[in-house]
Length: 198
Image 1 (tube, helix red, strand yellow):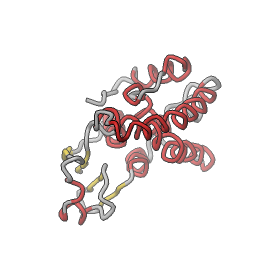
Image 2 (image 1 turned 90 degrees about the vertical axis):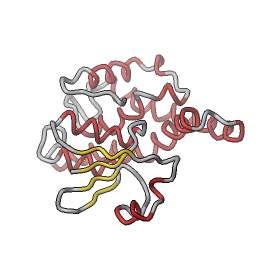
Image 3 (image 1 turned 135 degrees about the vertical axis):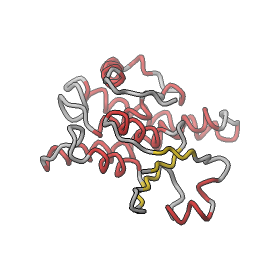
Image 4 (image 1 turned 45 degrees about the vertical axis):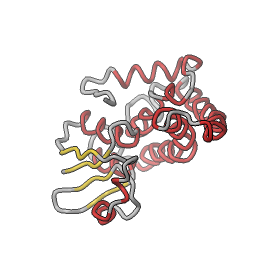
């Protein structure tokens, strides 16, 4: 099994973290987004959407989209519920991550960390703060009620949102205002097989 990704990307880190937690072996293929690796013909044959992470199975099949990949890898494990409603709650948080969290927190981090906060993107960076804090507020309210996003057990929903939340400070977000999120981050980081982003 091969995983194509950039270790500094939260979406790619999700996949590495799931593999660590579940003892899944794989070969990591580093992809340089800024150098245009995902736009090269050989990569586009694997994923016409030109994005990472990308999972290549030993039988030659490919799977893209980070949350689809981690749910596939976690199928049958304690990290992905079998009950239909519980599974839908996981997916609810994963859609939240992709539509209400990642477009703000990950993009602000990209502008600051990858691009060095250039003047011409400063206004965009500032505009991302409002949406990012709104997402963090939603998470904080849920995590005041339960240890994890869907209840008392760690699921792929938590992995999805952990990936960019734990580095939100690199996008200018102050997590000290969110004690429930901080406790949740600590719980995930204390998992026995946890690995960091780098």
